[in-house]
Image (cartoon, rainbow, N blue to C red; front, side, top):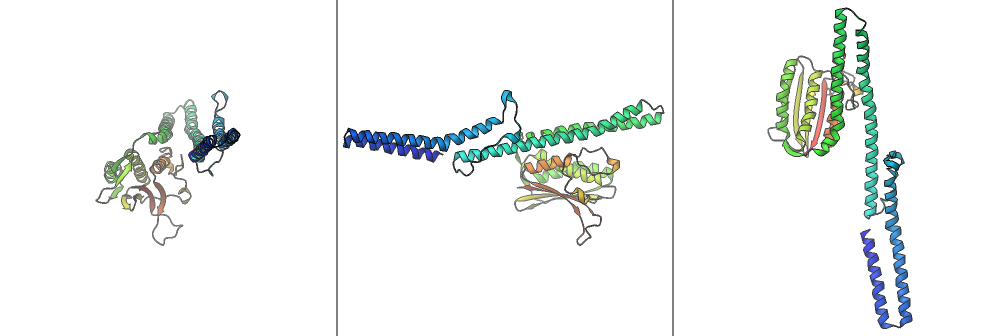
Length: 341
């Protein structure tokens, strides 16, 4: 667009200079003709510029204004259509691409928020229904032992609701917090050593061996250390929770070219094959009945969001011996985190 404006200015300047020389070299009739020609060229260039610049800008502005209805009412994202001017190589083309990308991101965010709200509503209804049933039954029973059991149910559901609300609050604020928090250089090896030292007490209490295998040299990264620590605490505590006395959890890290790999392995029951693609979904939890309600199902979803915000990847897989039957029970579960250096 800037090149078009410069070219138009040069053409107008050339016509004006030609008119000036014509005034000196010819008579009044020729001068009038040259001036008329210059005027016509200027009008033509103005129309061309209006077509090439003003109209596309007006179309983009009108499309952007549709997103806000009368009285500040927000229009549904599906009704906002931004003209596709990506074929243009000038600033207008870039503006069109940027606006279309912003609208797409906004629509995705709105859809995600709607799904999240629906998931939250569904998850909160379950403990509320259990609470309502327990409170109603409490009014009708007279035996002390029955009342104690119902009070245990109420206490469990209240703690479950408290955990849900806390995790939901963290998940809803996570994205905005990640944008505000500053990334800094830190040594991931030092962070992992500190975490595993702290969590070793939890593993020992359950009779689980916590094994670490880290390189001697630093694993330097740039990121939000506290958030990445949150990821590894969640993975390690999850692994410990699925293990029983005599099992082991192993955490190891290696540098691979331009990435750092951190792996958390356990010798627990493994992950059901149908759950491998679901474990990172919000509120999904595949746990024994004895552990029901003790986890919100948001931990792995939050971990995935943090890792991807750092440009990394995370996935889950089962541990199997080489050549083992895929239908046989796995030897344990493995979570892999890859982070860019």
